[in-house]
Length: 265
Image 1 (cartoon, helix red, strand yellow):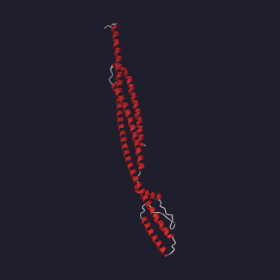
Image 2 (spheres, one colour):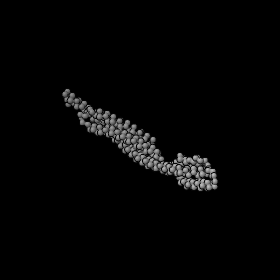
Image 3 (cartoon, helix red, strand yellow):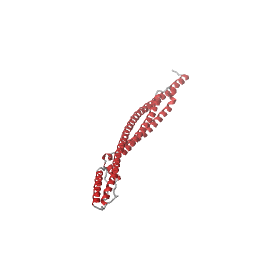
Image 4 (cartoon, one colour):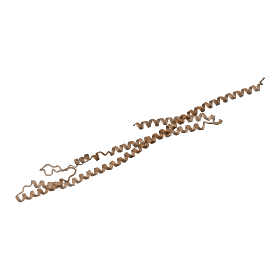
């Protein structure tokens, strides 16, 4: 069989065309397989980021709830502390009111004891005044609650009431008051509130990374079945998707490190 020159040229063109299209199809299959593997890994990243963001949000809510509880404890203990301190201040105030009367009777008794009577009648009157004032002073003295007045026997004008020491004794002796720690509760509330804020930031970073990976997945999904006219756009789409993935990985890694730091601190 003899082939003409035109037939040979036509056969050569057909074989060359089949070879070129065959290579393009092979390249398309390889590129499609690479995209499938890439998309599967991106899908795993999306799942991991979803779990981490949910975990960070849950821990933030736990810290926020604990902060609210500590804040409530702070207000409750602060109210009880103020009430107990006001009670002790009222006790000292009542003692100071009694001290004025006690000082008056005590001074009259001391003055009567120092008088030198001019006769028996005056002596009897002074003794009666001394006894009367002494009894009145002793009755008032029994009513002191926080502390007793101090004096130097026989020294007129040396009587005093130790208000500061009495108040300090009332405060330190109050076991309920000493057991209150409103400041510690407030510090704990602020610390937990700070943790909640940091974890919310971590959750936001995880979500941002999740958005980038989702964008990469959607971009590759649209290009998974390209038309012939769109083949030239595939390298650009492939590059954009990998850029999204790189950004998502960087955000996710930074958020993960910050997550660990917040939980360990």
